[in-house]
Amino acid sequence: MAEQPQPPAPIAPPPPSSQGPAAAIPFVLTAVAALCLSLLVQALLPPRLPVALPATPSPPSLSAPSPTEAPALPMPGTTATPLPAEGVLRLNLLDLQAQNRQLWSALYLLRAVAQLDDALVALQANDLDEADGLLLTVYRSLDRAYAFSAEQEKGPIDAFRLQISQIRDDMHLRPEGTERRLRQIRRLVLSLVDEGG
Image 1 (cartoon, rainbow, N blue to C red):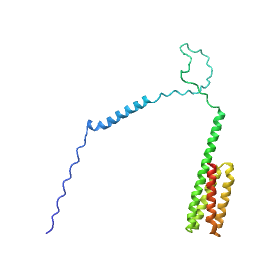
Image 2: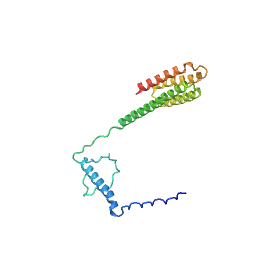
Image 3: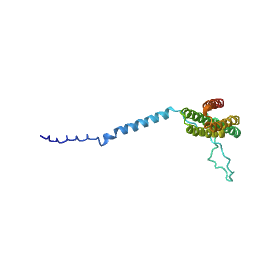
Image 4: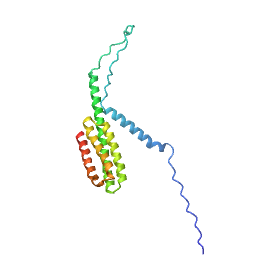
C-alpha cells in the first residue's frame, strides 16, 4: 500500500509583538541614561578657559567711543602667554618636514628589504623571471627612498641601486653568486635604516 502523505504541521503564528508605549521604554531609558551620564561628565571636567586670540589692528574710527562701553580688562586668573616668534615656528615646521622625509625614506627602504626577501625566495625556487621582476620593484623602492632621503643617505642608496642593476644584468648569465649579493645588500639597507632611525 502506498503511504498517504501527511499534511504539514500548522505553522505557529508569530508571537505578538509588543506595540505601543511599552516598546519605547528601552529607548527612553537609554536616552535618559545618556543624558545623565553626559551631564555628570560635564560637571566633573574642569572648566575650559577661553582662548585669547591675537588682536588684529583695526583702522581708527572717527567716532568717539560710546560712554557705555567699558574697556576690556583681562580676566583674573588668566595670563597672557606670548606666542612663539614666527622664526621659531618656521624652524619647528622645517624639523617636522625633515622627520617626515626621514620616515618616508625609512619606509621605502624597509619596503625594498621585504622585496629583496621575496626575490631571494624566487631565486631559491629557481624562478629567475619572478626574481628579475622583484628586483625591478626593489630598484623602484630605492628610487623613492632616494627622493625622500637626507643628503648623507643618498650616496649609499645610490650604491644600492647600482648594485641591484648589476645583479639584474648578471642574474641570467651568472646566477651563482646572486643570493649572497642580495643578502649583503639586504643587511646594508637594514643597517642604513638603523643608522637613520
